[in-house]
Image (cartoon, rainbow, N blue to C red; front, side, top):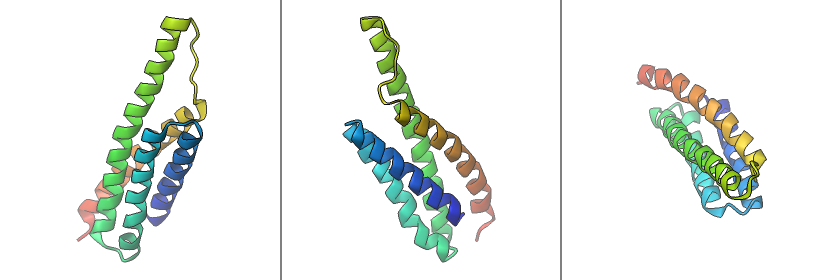
Length: 121
């Protein structure tokens, strides 16, 4: 579980950097917050506490909600450009792909850790 949380923290840190580079500061702050949720749970995971698993589950749920919102917002902006300008393009294409990879990773993380949380005492 420690390695999964490190991967999630790294993924959200990379997404935060790309969002700042594309001047999407509000969403970058949300991605940074999710990164911090995973990082704060790492010490509890190392001590084999149930709260570390709860941090990871919370981070994955909030991450899933955020990524769903972010992908819908990117698609809405692309369709808005299609309607108004006649061009269909994603402006931050790298952010879209990173968000999709993190979405799939968070789905795996949520279902994997849910079972682990139930078995931990």
